[in-house]
Image (cartoon, rainbow, N blue to C red; front, side):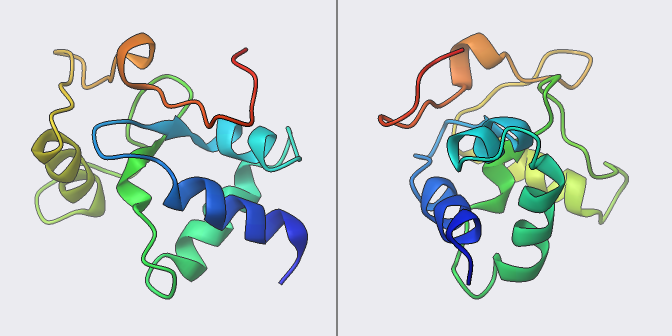
Length: 109
């Protein structure tokens, strides 16, 4: 496993309940500011193996990227986040100023 992947796993595992990070934010914190798609790959291929809280990763607009129709991953993601106390606006967005998590070893941008 490469260093970037290891770091992505570590960062995602460190996100506390009730907080979120964006794909790009995780990538930047892991050392690759343009690696958001690689974060998606890690989530897709390693969430189960490493018990990653995949639902805490959202897009840069504060939304869920997966479809939110009945029985979908997007609906499940929203349910998991709401169970952690995260609220959504009427347009389905999360207030990043309230819920975004910044790992201790990264700088807020």
